[in-house]
Amino acid sequence: MSIMRRGQNKTTSPSSQSLLSNAFELREEDLFALFSEQLPDSMYLLDLDDQDVPGKIIYTNDAACRIHGYPREEMIGRSINELDKEDEARKSDSRLDKLRSGEVLTFEEERRRKDGTPFPVEVTARTVEWKGRRVAFAIDRDISDRKQTEDALQSSEFQFDNLITASERQAQERALLDRVRTILADE
Image (cartoon, rainbow, N blue to C red):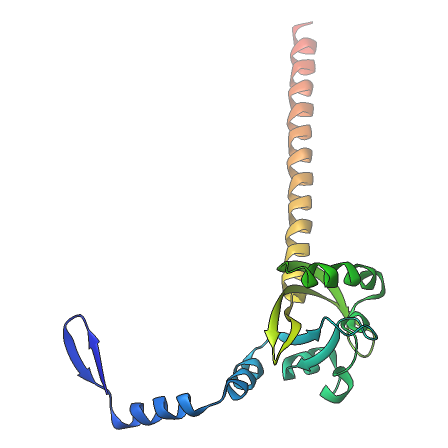
């Protein structure tokens, strides 16, 4: 096997040829499983057509199980709404409707771990065809660290604004005091 690059002919090594041959022999399902299990983020396939269980999880990766604290067997068949924090679950039906209409969604919400602990996620979801079914492909990224950093930054900005305000007030008071001293000194 040869690779042409900028006029040069480079022959791949036998080991590279073997890897390429093996990669082409992998079925789509194997590639899907290989890639999805390497993701550090939660990944789901949700059945959009199941009337009994809206947003039914039909596939999830190991990261989702680890982050949420559920074994895979308990996640499969569950509605994605059950992972949402209670006040977020109301929005889920509307989001599922948007996915059914073909919208690509990106949003932040609160999820719940099995033990009830809430945590923030950023969700990206879209509708895809998978095994002849219309499903939502969704990736959730745990943004707890980012939210903590944003909160710390906001607190720091608030403190900085307070210091600036106090400094400006002190400068005005000092100027007023200097004027009073000048007036008193002139008398």
